[in-house]
Structure formats: C-alpha cells, structure tokens
Image 1: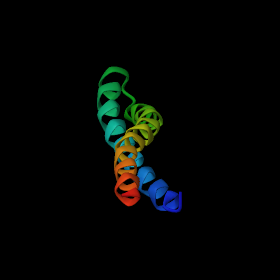
Image 2: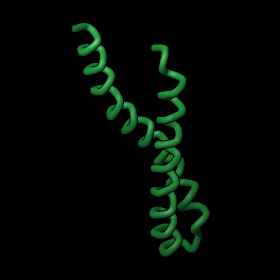
Image 3: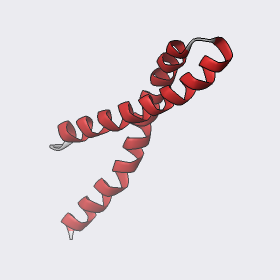
Image 4: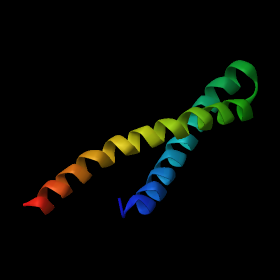
Length: 73
C-alpha cells in the first residue's frame, strides 16, 4: 500500500495514453461519419481513460501478488 501513489501516477499515464490513442482512432472514424473529429476525440478519451485504468490495474495485480509471495519466503 506504500507504493499506491507511484502506482496511481503510472496507471494515470497509461490510461491517458490509451485514452488519447483511442480518442484519435475513434475521432478519425467519427469524423469520417459525422464530420466532427473533436467529438470523436472527446468520446474516445472519455471511454479510453477508464479502460486504461482497468487495464493497468489488471496488469499490476499479478506483479504485486508475486512480489508479496517472494517477500514472504
């Protein structure tokens, strides 16, 4: 629990990166369909950031468990 601040910063940057990537991708698709790239980027970031948080949390959980197991031995 002591590393939560660093872990939170790391997951934030990962989620923002994924959000921006999805935002650009969805923005291009929505922009083609609705002539509004900005709307697509906003939607992509809105959906991408929570997805990135969930993804980075799933990635960090096994490493934390294995680290605790090694420390216990």
